[in-house]
Image (cartoon, rainbow, N blue to C red; front, side, top):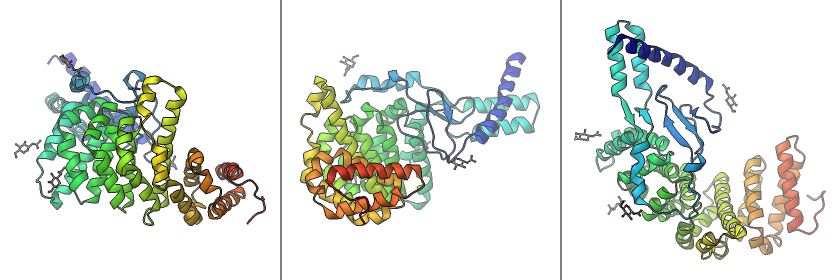
Length: 421
Ligand SMILES: *[C@@H]1O[C@H](CO)[C@@H](O)[C@H](O)[C@H]1NC(C)=O
Ligand SMILES: *[C@@H]1O[C@H](CO)[C@@H](O)[C@H](O)[C@H]1NC(C)=O
Ligand SMILES: *[C@@H]1O[C@H](CO)[C@@H](O)[C@H](O)[C@H]1NC(C)=O
Ligand SMILES: *[C@@H]1O[C@H](CO)[C@@H](O)[C@H](O)[C@H]1NC(C)=O
């Protein structure tokens, strides 16, 4: 290696120290990650929204994410299967370092401790040896997972969770998700956990990975659908009472179904709708998860309506058999939502954001349920109680929610006095 090259590279290595420090102090770990068109650092443990491009920055070793380029988004309503393309992930992978920043820190530490050129050169070589493409890392993680014993062992739980956590980060990126699927990850890693494992933490992590890889990724959605994950998730929703498990199952379920009318048809016409409404009916499910259920229902109802409004012929053809609203009706959605609000409204009084989610759902499905809801004195009582409580708040957000409730009540119930209750 020429001296001048080495010097330049050393400069890079020492610059890493500064980047590492400034990046980790700048990031607020509990703050919500707001994605833009630029790469931004994701703090350790910080949650990120689905559908982003995620990478590990070559220079800093830190995880970064940004919005997808418009050209990367597949806007097709029903994803098109094209196996020819799905293998191409490896051609345009970002170069990335091993999925932990530890190695860089280790190299940098060595550089600081031992300043001879020989040591520096060795540190640089170690550093370089650990470059991997994302695709290589994904494949290696699957291989590591395959090496675990088939029987559940306590000592393997932690390393398994660790692998799933790394996969969750990597598979937000579309290319990585497709590499994972092509390398057998659905069959060898996720399916056995989601279908057969009894460990809740593992199930939750596996469903997070599933949500990450299916979110905003039509090709992945097809594969997930083909493996029958829709009914496996519905099964979990019908049988679990664990809050985290239900919440992640709902998230993965939504990621699978959104903008995928074929899957919506197959899954929601069978166990899917029943599972969603079962969650609303269950006394063991917390209100926050029920709000997630009605939000997903509302989104799916609106998705079809938007397609009908736009009137694009190819899209219409795909949604025409999808009769989610009548499946909701026949599975007792209107009565189930009425009962949730009538019974649990006391718990809504200190959760304005949850109230807002319910209001959105009530509005979206108003045409479907108004005959029932407008005749329900208990629902009326519940909505007015929450409205009145929030109307006396100093908080602007609560006042807004209160106004939305007023508008809703005016539509449902011809007259109601402002002094009522
Ligand atoms: C981080 O962000 C959260 C939420 O925005 C805020 O409550 C908290 O004070 C911030 N912490 C720091 C250290 O800035
Ligand atoms: C895949 O590629 C082969 C050869 O390049 C081609 O014959 C075939 O039609 C392609 N299939 C799809 C689904 O694009
Ligand atoms: C899996 O186990 C085999 C045999 O013990 C070993 O040779 C291989 O390196 C392991 N692979 C990974 C990725 O850990
Ligand atoms: C789940 O367990 C059953 C019974 O042991 C087995 O037949 C089946 O193949 C397993 N399914 C998956 C996806 O691992």
